[in-house]
Length: 379
Image (cartoon, rainbow, N blue to C red; front, side, top):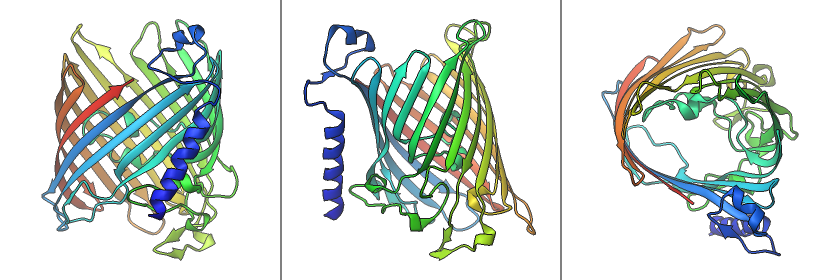
């Protein structure tokens, strides 16, 4: 009940923030329409995913079936040609599945993943609020049903702070944008979730970027739209995440064993059209971290490679991610994930994909078969 009240308060606060009191809202308009109306413009999409993962052939008695639902509404309220508000919500299972125990549509919680006030004029853009800093693309762009699984380890999300970007060199040699942001972990009521409460993040929880100041930073450089290689894009990024305290199993880690995490990522993706109907898109990303997760001396490297192919409505994908961990005084740990998948996207927006992955983690192997149904409703 307390969580429901908190959620209602949060929704009311958000609506009060994004809804002007002096004008009604025009829905489903384009930016070009703004010159013909004084009403704010709302656009966005809602993505739906239902995925069933059956883990089998495990070496640690963790066979299980996990049926999951994910719904992600995202909205943009354009207040003026320069000012806008972006909001993104996520409904998903907010706790990890228990190995060896089946689960179906359980532990579903709704939380705010993005809520920013944005200003854009010409090549300049600035923003403030709750956001995901620009670091890495493999956690989002790797093709296949399971292609992003390992890379999601280093997705930086649900941070509070501000940042900006500058776009330059638009023309034959591509469009490039440099971005920077400073941030801290979200410890406000927005870190809680409705329906299934995942709990509020607090300073005492410790962890990466959970500091009392905006002392974590991410800097990125992205490029695309090259005249001679139109399907190419690149990404280079640095991130430094402050660590004040670490807590494991309810016990604070000694200060001598913690250190700020530093990360570097570089990626290339190239969509190449073989014919009008057939295209292939290879991707590669290398990401390396010192003091991974704030643990002094633990270094970790991720290497992700993948290739996706599309023919009319059909798609297929192969991908591999290696995760290599070095710990002082201990044997290195080499984990790997290989996946293969295929599917079809119908004209009315429904996609059906099937995939299989083989995972090696801490020398334990497992296989997982998955079926994914997806749909995106744009407005």
